[in-house]
Amino acid sequence: MKLSIPLISMVIVASSNVNAFAPTSTSTYTAPFTSTSTSTFTQLHVSTSNPSTAANTASSSSPSSPKAKSPMFEHLKFDNSPSFDVLAKTQQYVQQTAMDGKVDESYYASDYVLRGPVIGPIGRKDLSGSQNGLGLFEAYPNVKIDSFGFNIDPENNYRCFYFQRWRAVMEGDLDAYGDVYPATNQEAEMPVSVFNVVWNPEGKIVYEQVGAVVDRLEGNTQGKAAVFGLLHNAGLKIPASPGDKVFQVLQRLGHLKGDMGRSWSRESDIPKWWVSKSRGADDTEQW
Image 1 (cartoon, one colour):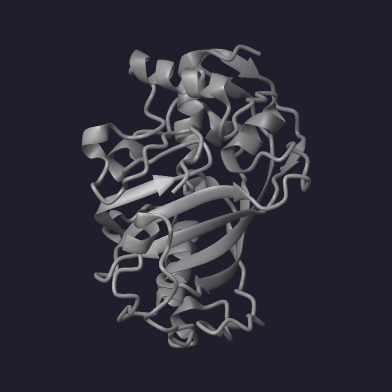
Image 2 (tube, helix red, strand yellow):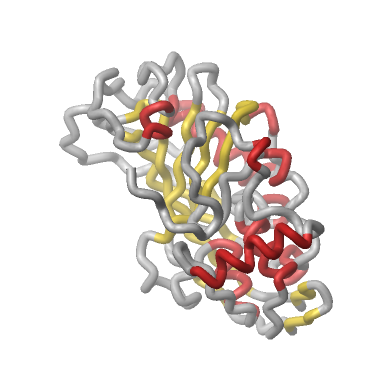
């Protein structure tokens, strides 16, 4: 296996798009669970798989909640009183991308940011060109993505969490910039990951967090989820994790080369509300 800098850089950027496999996947949408939370802010009672009928099923939580230590997450609460059903809107967003495979750019705010364990902060402009060159569509033509467990953050009514589990069989060869990994016909079972979406008061997605593994002992990809799990199953076992100093250097060298996409957006393209200085696999700062 050749872990070239351009390949690593491209792999990270590719992993940042949660809708990367929707056009050729057999994605499924699973009904959200019924919450048994005793939270003083939110009680959810949702048992339908149809987002259009899920509206008005989540009671509003109090506009007042403990102040977030991170100024970004305090900012993302806005007025904490959305005029629309955040749960239903998130379900619709996830279901639509799973069903028709199209990324509707009208969902996103102009100051949108995506962050994952080792990618981001990255905006829509840099995400749009990040899915070419790895041959993942050909290697995994039938990725199954189950989305479930939609729930509103009890401290932020604009934020919705949900889970995903990916399964896929490597049916074709993986051509990663000339390094060919033959089809194995082996199934990859990725561990469940948690995602969250934050909407702004205008009903646009302003922040999206992707791919945080819930239980790294689950599945057969050594704790790697989503695209990293698929690459692991193909034999490209990339040791990427938050705080990894070597990987941090490789990400920056990949940016210097400049022709394989980006692991995070340029500073001039990162919105002002994103005040964290952590980039890619950097350590998380202490607030």
